[in-house]
Length: 88
Image (cartoon, rainbow, N blue to C red; front, side):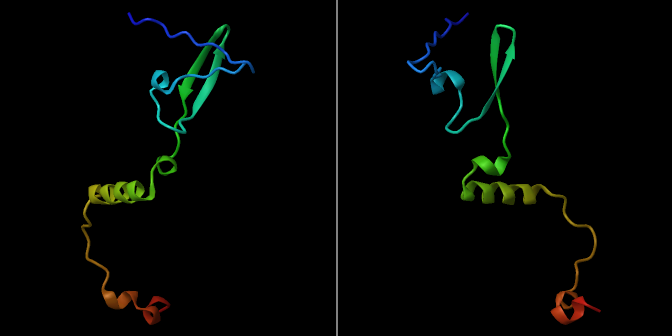
């Protein structure tokens, strides 16, 4: 059994929890739940794009597209996509 971590409030009565104890990176969000005397921090899930850099979002999107099922029907002819043919 691991030794418990003792936390102490600062002069303003705020509790600071070291990042190593939380096991979370910067800007991680937690929901505080209280059950009687017990306080529980529950990781808050955020949309994937909210925590990724633009390059990581692009890479994740391309990986997702690569996993989509391949099309089974005929392709739309290029002529059908011409502006003058879109409104017929």
